[in-house]
Each structure stands twice: as C-alpha cells, then as structure tokens.
Image (cartoon, rainbow, N blue to C red; front, side, top):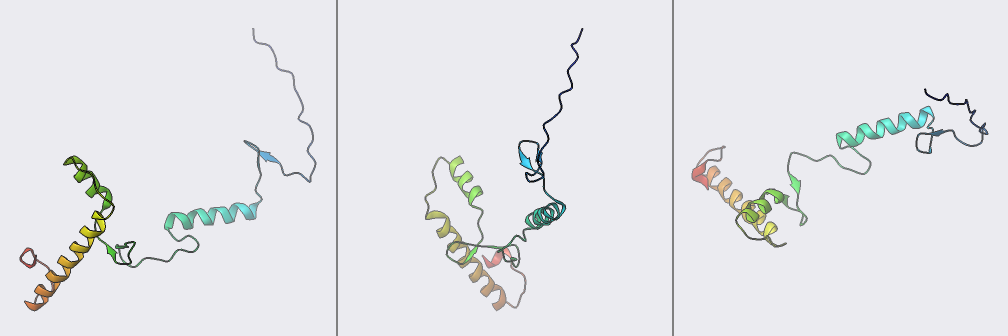
Length: 121
C-alpha cells in the first residue's frame, strides 16, 4: 500500500518579493512578457537592435569587400585533400574570385551581352 502524503501548506510570501516560477525565476508581469515576445520575434527576423538590414544575399568580408566564398566548404574540401588551410588563404581566394568575375563582366559587356557565360571565364 502507498502511504498518503500529508498536506503541507506553503509559507506565505510577502507582496514585496516577486513570486517564484520554476527554478527560482521571478514571474514577469504582462508588459515584460509582451516586450520579451517582440524582442524574440525581432531576433528571429534578424532585425535586432543595432543591426542594419543587408542589401542582397552577399556578405561583407573583414577587409570591407564582398565575401563570395564559403569558408567552411573550402576548409572541408582542403581537409579531404589532406592539407590544412592557413588564415591568409581564404581572403586570397576570395580576392582572386572577385577579380575573375570583374574581368568576366568586362568581357561580357564588350561582346554586347548582359548574361555571363562560361566563355567569359
């Protein structure tokens, strides 16, 4: 047979102390809940405080140019080939890629086209 638990009353809390919820966290009032909810939504959309909306899908590289290469993919490919990647390699590859795309754009425009093709590389 199971033993019956005795009803133990919780000690009364004073109104000065906030009520505890779960692991000792104070209960939020309605205005704090609403504020926290809107902040979470803004973080999910990437519109947090102090952030500027980016134009396009490109990201900025540390030197201020456009970052075109995916660093993790390049490192994984190099690792599969049995070599490591130095810190100055990724920016150099990115710079070479930007230079190659710019020369391809010039060649494309010189031929009177608005679409880059394989022959421009």
